[in-house]
Length: 504
Image (tube, rainbow, N blue to C red; front, top):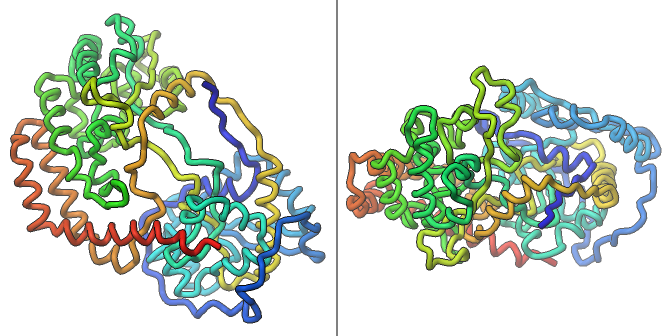
């Protein structure tokens, strides 16, 4: 089965790939209310329909300042593309890029200075309270009216279907930024993997690893091939594999990786789903020497590349970009790894052979709409109309300049294996707590995670019995206020699905 990645040669989709997590969200002072750009706007007026875009957008040259937390992606692209857009539109972008590691401080410095650029990406990540607070403070512009008037190409994409729409707006129905919107949710780019060359030595194939018992038998065989003769399976930070790739078999999301699941519209704290049975199997494997003990002392969530390459582990999570197996790392290594080194992706295993793949509801997936690094227009933008018309044109280029690139077969085989299971329990990425909810439950949420992670690790290493699970639940409910936290997440989930009511 062939897989393709659509490469969109535009600024908007490039900018949305930029890193924007930094070192947390600084406290942000109140901003003067956004000027009323739309005092004459009639919401009953039909929105402008997409059509031919008259160029140039501005007869006189216009330069917009654009703050973005990373220049890396721009450095890797042909800058002539940006020059062509500027020549066609009369609009030039002047990039403001802070040094790596200073993003949060730089953002805060701009806010305190009161001298703002025209555009900023990652406002949702850096502004205290996120995009909703930035809107209410008047720091950024709500784009609903602007989209109707000046951005018909963007409006068509935002409103193409209900699933896309609810990811593009906030709980009040506001379009707060220009988001990266793909054709469909992405498939899994990370999953469970094993040393394929070790499987060959055992006379086993990936079909033998479709159940938890089958994977356990492979791990028992792998142990003899490891460099130190120890456990071949890597568990990440907090005793789970990255992206649900093993704990997802039991429906356990991991309270630190994703504290809540969306179980048919109900927010369920992760420790209530599958944790006890997952802990029991991992404790059994640990006692048999099938889990690499180093995972407890190392902080990596994902299986470390050095341990893969040098034969310390033979199973864990890995990404499709690794293809046939970390060749660049192997080539630069001082210790020559096995020349037959080869990784292969396997499907998240079924707990029982009688189960169906549809019984597994967690895997790595991303929504079609990525808001993590969306581009927001600031309230002090020098010309809102031209700014919106500019981005509307850039969005039109995304559709015209789409390039379909076929992925290598080694990648697609892994993705096909990982996509065999569903992701319908993954809590929506764009469902968000309000600022007050987040502040109100953050301490309780942290305490719940500490208690659940401590219990899981102690059970795995044999310091606690898995039968003590009811004690953990009692602790979460009585001491850690998990019920109050759940109420906040349920409210966020309800508001998320209610966004559909704002769709025209």
